[in-house]
Image (cartoon, rainbow, N blue to C red; front, top):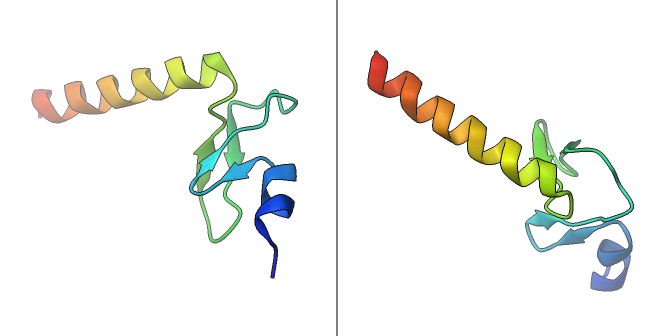
Length: 62
């Protein structure tokens, strides 16, 4: 079992991923399948909002 200090070294803070040294926008989840956002990368926040807006527009169109 990892303690909080080990998780912080890997960039995880609770449910958020924050690692300024990691230049990826989306990173694989630590547990299970899927991806999460690297909130330390400003481009990833913009990409997340674009995905949300596109999803809302897609739902509204259909």
